[in-house]
Image (cartoon, rainbow, N blue to C red; front, side, top):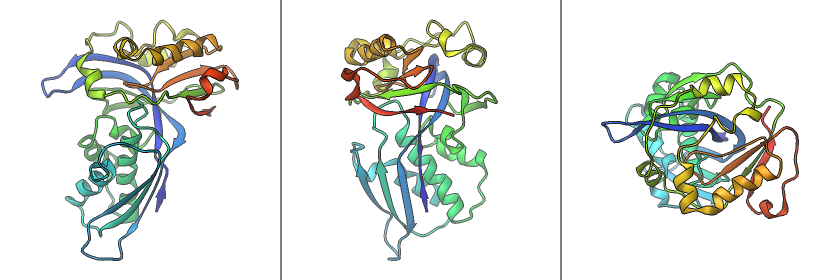
Amino acid sequence: MVVFPRAKINLGLRITARRDDGYHDIETFFLPLPFTDALEFVVNDRKGQKDKLVITGIDPGGNPGDNLVLKAAEKLRRIHSFPSLKIHLHKAIPAGAGLGGGSADAAYMLRGLNRLFALNISCEELRSIALELGSDCPFFIEARASYATGRGEKMTLTSKEILKNYYMVLLNPGINVSTKEAYQNCKPSKPEESLLQIIETLPPEKWKSKVVNDFEDNVFSKYPLIGKIRQDLYEAGAVFSLMSGSGSSVYGIFKSRHAIPDKLKKHLIWQGSLQ
């Protein structure tokens, strides 16, 4: 079976509270992108062996044995029995980029195994399993535009076609930002306006002063290049630009297909219309 885990961006990200369990409550809007990894898995014909993972494409970093794809298979196997696997993960979504690449890979592994072995696990149960792998993993079980609260697992699907007829440019400077460190430096606060209402009622041209990412100030202070990229996108004509997640990717939203300055082209990882 072959599946294509999709990247996501955050349209705004507010840190609303520190939790007693060590996590944080957030408010964000997840939007899936047509920018994917490729994940293939088949039954291992050598019985009795462990799952075997081969990774190609860009380097995801870390120990391959700790990859979330393997952890997803291991976690599901504790509940349902299925054979060992040969897995090929081709990475296009950069790691530590605020795009949820690793979480998407894990969630799509759960989804794919559910289909391949006809396990009949509900979406709700899959999301519960995914949450044990990472806070944004549950989103990728359906990968549909969603307003999220809690750790990111409490989701409300939107019926509005967000960013229809707009054009997006996605840039990444190759900086791996630690999500753990980003959370340690944040100062939680309660937003005055609901992000859901802002996103669903106002056009992107009016988001600049209302849709914010609480990670940006600290990340831009440590990595000025990321903040400079955001400013350059505005100067290039973007109607809205923001860092995604805890960084380091930055997206720019344009009213139509747009040529970006040469100085930004080296950071370009995806561009296109969303609908």
